[in-house]
Image (cartoon, rainbow, N blue to C red):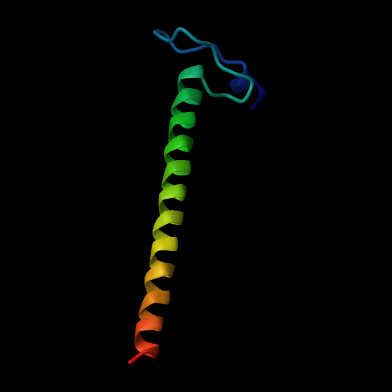
Length: 65
């Protein structure tokens, strides 16, 4: 599909198509999605660490009973 990669932007679009077939608008959208995913990964990492801390505290509490 070499022709699809060189296709001009649809009417109403200011940007042309990049070599990989996505417009600049689509690239910005994908960058935004990637940013959100990276933030969610960080948040999930923090939740995971908090759960591990709670597990350690629960085990410690149970061992002292």
